[in-house]
Amino acid sequence: MKIEIKAMIEEMNEMTRYRFNKLNDDKEELYINGIKAQHSWKYTQKQQAFAMNQICEYGVRATARILQIPRSTLQNWIRKYYIDVPRYPQWMDSWRRKKLKMRRIFQGY
Image (cartoon, rainbow, N blue to C red; front, side, top):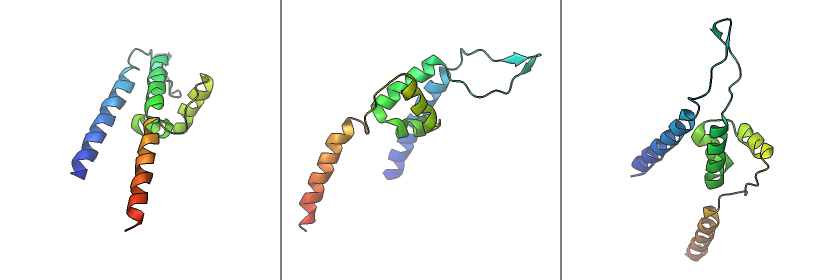
């Protein structure tokens, strides 16, 4: 059961990563003297917007893990666009409360 869930999550992550990388297809390649230039990776505005939406939903660390891009890159984009990102995703608050409640219940046993 756990293996199936992990496989399903990884499949979803791969689909998200594919969608993110597909947004880069319209980018023009840089050629110097007919040779493809070796330059640092540049992300398009569409990719940055997609990543910002993912950050708002899942958080910085999870987005970096899902999209397989450095967390520092995401943090630079957050600073660049003055986006206020909560310390943890919104859904995590109710999850934490439920977990603390269950911990208190089972402490007595």
